[in-house]
Image 1 (cartoon, rainbow, N blue to C red):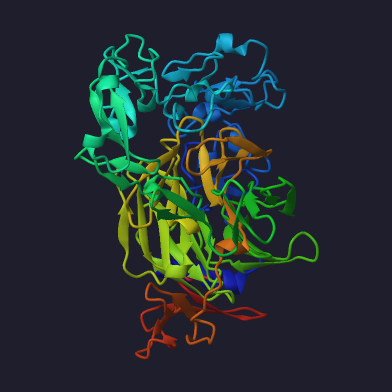
Image 2: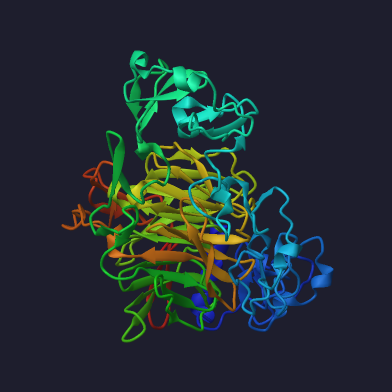
Length: 617
């Protein structure tokens, strides 16, 4: 291979360096010609697009040739139904015949279709509540929303009689929960017993025992309640009854998932929520709001990169007329994205928002298919996953680049925990995994491998030490603590074709291919689902930027201790690294030319080109 490359490069440099062109092979047998890199499809006009975009009802080639001859590719192409033409079984088709919404959002009192056709008079007559809870007003909500402390039915009936008048069993209806089991198996509130009213309906909550009880002999730690069966001890709010049926123990409310947005402080019989630095606690004494203005959500749509302020929903365009913008990340007023230029994958940097911005291509060589980009705001190093070359790379702000992890299956997303020098990435195809390593590429280990189909994108909720990821095959969003415990499903019934996600404050955001939208929901419960923005093309990567999620810490690389790359590690320090044509000296700080790397010196009439095989930069 190297010898052929040498011949080709010398031929191009001396004979036709600026004119050499390998013609596209116009074949229609499903084989991608060598003109395009692995995983790409050649357009008739010479462009290269992702092979997955072939015959998906969208013209991704500028000449539309990726949608030609689709009837001949049944064995090669995975056909996708466009929401513009037909909705899937789990979707509701709006009357405007232009969009689909999740079936769970039909007739939920919120107009989700642009024409409002999902909410019409007496739409409840057309509702199917199978496997869901039927509200008193005939609307539907998920069973898991019933008696969870939040009114999800329009009439609030999912929270009616949650502590009383429910058919129950002795194992569910307990005194320590301040409940009383009636003779007819109804469960009522304990304080409704012996009140001279038939609350059970069979009279079993009243009787002779109500008048003959003597609480003095019960020796209760807190309170005593007379019942027809005798005295029982009860506890004050915030406490629970112990096994001896007399002693009360404090309840640690801070162990209840989502009880506070961020930090929780337990106290005897109560608790208090508090927020981290740069956040303020709102009047509900639970929600934390970031100080310093609105967060910016940046997202790519193949031909453009756009920004949106998450509170006001004001959108603006950062870059337009792009070829294939997929991955994107932002750090203050600097935006990075992947793009296709002259049939080559590149990484682009733009400094400044909208006006007076300056754009430059910073990585042009050694890339195949960028699937994710993340910025380390401490060192300003750029990390990326390359789905085509199956690896993770990193570049400094002055574009010294190297490869950190090789030999992956199909890396599709990356996120950084810069404060601890860690990076997490999703990998795999049919059998996915989420892995973690130091930001210097060391100490690689599998973080999650069970019950994963195709983890596509992931992000970190910094204040809560949780990792969120989207599974594009199972169409679910899950989260887990960074210590590997408390794995939870966040969203599963509404999400359609998720691609990438981000999290900020108490909200989860994601891009959705099924509806060409940016959507959001509550990061704890999955409730409060909304469509924030509709895009003309498929939305790809998203990233949320705000000063509150970038705490001010010392940068160990600030003094430039390394001759080329300075990378954060898990020891609160740094590790030096070198570009692919060099290797680290014994001092672990400086680099020298690598004897193992073959390189080629190409002479042209205008320049000397020092070419290294497998160069990245």
